[in-house]
Amino acid sequence: MCLLALAYEVHPRHRLVVAANRDEFRQRPTAALHRWEENPTILAGRDLLAGGTWLGVSETGRFAAITNYRDPREPRRETSRGELVGNFLAGDRPAADYLEGLAARGGDYSGFNLLVMDRTGLWYYGNRGPAPRRLVPGVYGLSNALLDTPWPKVVRLRSGLARQLADDAGVGAGVLLGLLADRWQPPAETLPDTGVPAHWERRLASAFIDGEDYGTRSSTLVWLDNSGARVRELSWPGGVVREGYLDFA
Image (cartoon, rainbow, N blue to C red; front, side, top):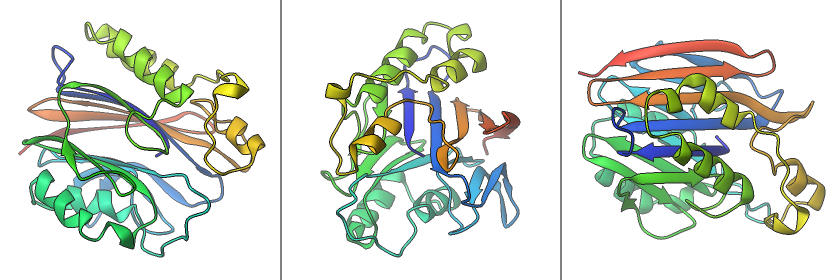
């Protein structure tokens, strides 16, 4: 996952609304949204190379999503960050305990940002930032830096979601997918300097990334309330739609 905006306890009906794009190399093998065979309580896509995932929900009312922290100067760790989402969804440790345990060994992983939610609330931890924290109700944006770092595409997506939160029509699939399909390019002087070449900063600057070798592989929406969750995923290229529903235990 490389870009997402979420509204937590802001919408009148949905406890959580998420709009997210996953950007990845085209050749990396991926399974689209599905119930995992070894644990059907989990609804998520899957990275078939390392076995983890970038975003998912579970029948126990849990949600998790992860983004990489972009720093090409950092040595790459072997342990897959995608396992952090799957482990949380499959487990039963409270979100705060899960992140506290993870923070004690955060250095085992390359840079990441992890959002986890259970019935206790929504929590955030980035292993290149401060300690885990519980998030207050609000609208948040995340890409490949710490939560709410004001990269142009983060601000644009977060603001777009915030404008749509008055009713169900505003957070319908068509509206949210329109926000994620945004190919707007910000002015060059507003781009972050993350250590990658300037042409890559430009290439990664839009919400939706086109490219033959690298780009947006899927757009995912989540609507979650106290009784269940609905997830809708469009895989690119082609815009193949998959949708799943969970009733929480």
